[in-house]
Image (tube, rainbow, N blue to C red):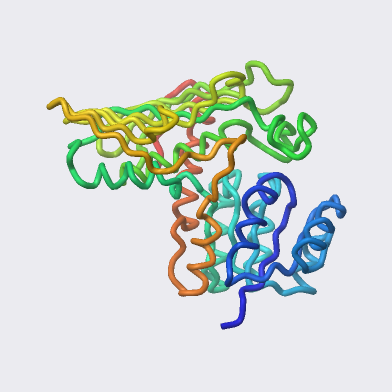
Length: 339
């Protein structure tokens, strides 16, 4: 079988740590193009992996005609670039948040359908071994129904992670549109929907800028009510300067499950009958310690086998809606129904 010709658009940190090495490690992939307005960044990867460097995305699409693209650009560009790629006949893997409005997300889904290409959203939390294990435990029924939960993602912010540090697009509203909620909160809205096999029905959000010098949000605390009736909190923060947190706790009828609260025992199940189970199942990625995400392999597999991607555009859209509703709640001071 001929290899899938992939172009990576945006050569910042997420490409450097995840997309490019994971494509390079996939036997079904040929990296054919790298795009970045800072052409030197694209050239660096072209020299290392082959393929051609471009500063202009449209020019690359026209000349290279890739089979698939990874969109790893600032949030504001996700929709227009994904739609252009789909219209050029390329499968699309887009970083999260997939878009910055619900209308954009809908247009992306339509473009993929119209052009008969796959659209996948890079929600990597679903693929992390502790989360996969936790979902298995939930499905087994041993814990019974989830009653309440807490899910949070906080770290010191993209200034320590982004290739541009404090000068990063993450802090510029025009390019980012949203801050910690778009960067981290959407990970958790996606995780809780997926893990609980449930949809969010109502959101209340406090979203603000507390410490960073930026015009986007650096913190959010949200209340979520699920369709099942379960209630919980979702926290996103760029100001966890000590004590990075990427954990989820589920309190259920028969006990509690703690995910990512302990450095070795990634999933801990404590039942009301006194039983305690500890699972060492691989780590959750941190900024310091990158784990292979599984996203790229899953995306390529969906193309090779012509099957629906594991994280569809519809899934990405539903997870985006939750954080958009949190912003609306902050603006209006009201609970917002997610429909």
